[in-house]
Image (cartoon, rainbow, N blue to C red; front, side, top):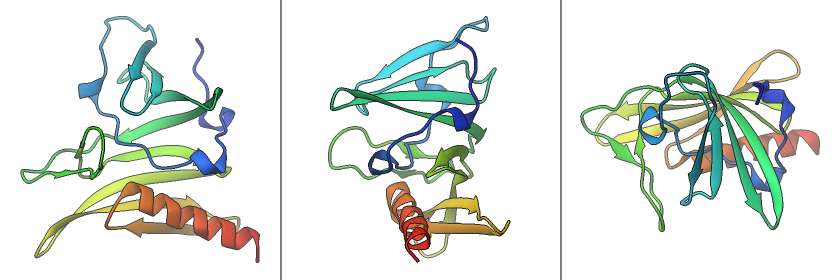
Length: 165
């Protein structure tokens, strides 16, 4: 399977959200250049990759009988601090959140950089940021201290408001 650039894949707006960080711990490794298929039953995604030989990871999810795909470029896996924060989910697995994790993808036709950054103050929190360049070349961003999903919702709200103004 040839590698595809990020722009070759589109996902409907109602399915777009920042994904749980993909780290080396969750993938099988091979000594050659073959793509690896990993089925994640928790998220109902199938991942195709050859990480770390190639930074691109392609995810496919079947929803209501249709295939939706998204590609990601891992920019930085980051690292886990001594006091690690976990994702908060009511159901399923709670994943460790790395500090300085960065992944690039296409959302709503824009190349975006999604990243995490630990904030060390009275209480340790993670700042989830979605960053993009607007049509005027200005770097814009939206962030949340609660979740990656909340940060992506703020991004989508900004884009939606811009389109309707």
